[in-house]
Amino acid sequence: MNAAKTAVLFTGGMKVLRMGMGGIPIQRLEAKEADRVLEKAVDSGINFFDTARGYTDSESKLGRVLPRYRDRVLIAGKSFSRGAAEILRDIESSLRDLRTDHVDVYQCHNVASEADLEKVLAPDGAVSGLLKAKEQGKIGHIGISGHKPRILIKTLAQFAFETIQVPCNFMETEAMQELIPMARRMHVGVIAMKPVGGGNIRETALNFRFIFHQGVDVAIPGMDSENQIAANVAALENL
Image (cartoon, rainbow, N blue to C red):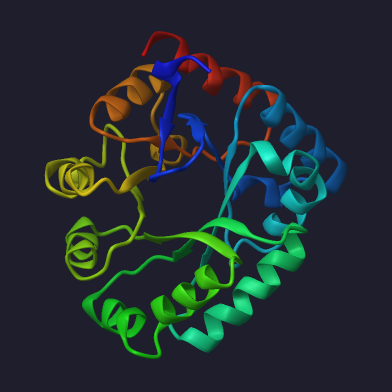
C-alpha cells in the first residue's frame, strides 16, 4: 500500500487503508447485495470494517464475507453494554455473528456522559470485561466511541484506550481542537465516524483530505453501493 494512503492504528498493528467502511448502511441491503458491496470493498483495498451489536444484522452480513479474508482485514465491534458480564456476552454474540474467533478492536459504544464513563470504568464495568476478553484472545484492542470530545478527553486521562472513534468533518471540528492532538501524543488510534457529515458534505474528497491532515488515521463512511466505494477510495489519490 502507498504510505500516504495507510495508517497504523496501534502498536504492532497491521497497516490499514485510511478509507475504512462503516457498517450501518448495509443493514438496508438484501444479503446477496451486501455480499457484492463487501466484496467490492475488499477488492478495492479496504481492510478496516466497523460494526456494532446495535446495528441489527450488520455483523452477520460482515460474517458472510469477511472470514474468507480474515488474515487481511481488521474488524472493529462495539457494544452499548456498560457492565463486564453484559459486554462479555455481547462479545460472544459478535464472534458468532461475525464467524471469527476474535475481533480486532472492541469499543465501548457512545460513551456520552460522565455517568456513562463512571459505569464503564467501575470494577465490574465494561472495561473490566474487555480486559478479560483481551487476555483470552477474543479481542485484540480496547477502544471507545462517542460524540462528545470533552467526555472522550476525560476517558483518555483515566484509562489507556487504544483507539477513539469520534465525529470529524468540515462541520464537526470540536475533536480537532484538543482531543485528537491528545490522542496523537498518547499514540491512540483515531477513527473518524460521520466523515462526510451524514451525507451532507458534497466536497467529499476535499473533506477527507482535511480530516486526514487533522490527525485522523482512518475514516469510516457508511457505504451501501459499489459506486460509493469506488468514489471514496479514489479520494485517497490526492492526499
